[in-house]
Length: 343
Image (cartoon, rainbow, N blue to C red; front, side, top):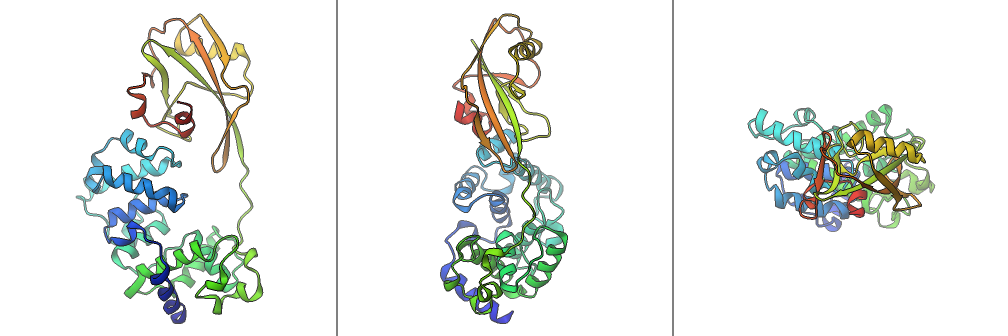
């Protein structure tokens, strides 16, 4: 492990990418970057990170913001529960912890939206605590280095990898060593076509010696993709188009969308009854805006979107969670990417 440490750090300091969150020990900025980069590529997450710091330069600024402001800035990044947890945690630290960011792994783990990897990343990057930060890049790197065929994301693998990586991480340079293992996995020990010839650890790599890189890491079987069918209704009146706030515990919670009927190939009578019951209107005409559904792909769901134009008589009163929007105020509301694209 000492050989690994020396080789890793030498490579890292020469080859690391120039990223803003690597130039700070501020736990707020490190936490923000880690939450944004969950399930997100660095090139995509960077602009969101800079935008968040521009709007909320401190933890206190984020805590004072409305959830709608936070979700609007997050728009297009996906996995919106991350943004809601981010906002909740900022308020919790300010209101319950007197604005003092937790300074160790165990206390960081108590924060909403902070798991073992994120807690370890903040603890080691900000405070040099010797705890391994194991993300997908590190699982891939160490499974190949030591020929580990235990399926990752299992409890057994978590314990096994934690023990091995812990032997590498020491307090003197814990932050650098964690970042080095992640960086090596990201830009050299890639999922496909790893650059083994330029890897500083190839001299001790089991997979490289056996030519087994393509077999590792071992993952669980792919999750079954769920197909859902969304029928969105564009209803425009003098006050503007009608939008509806998603309140249920589902994708896009607390984002705005057009009135929705989730149904595959609904009958016209079904749609008419839905609109009449919801808006108390009686005279309406329907026409499809897109004959072929637009497919919006999420990680475990494929959404088939059909937009309908609805012409109806005057709607006297909107139901709860509905509002009119026009060109002036629609840009202020957080909406799913698919709705933003349509607008």
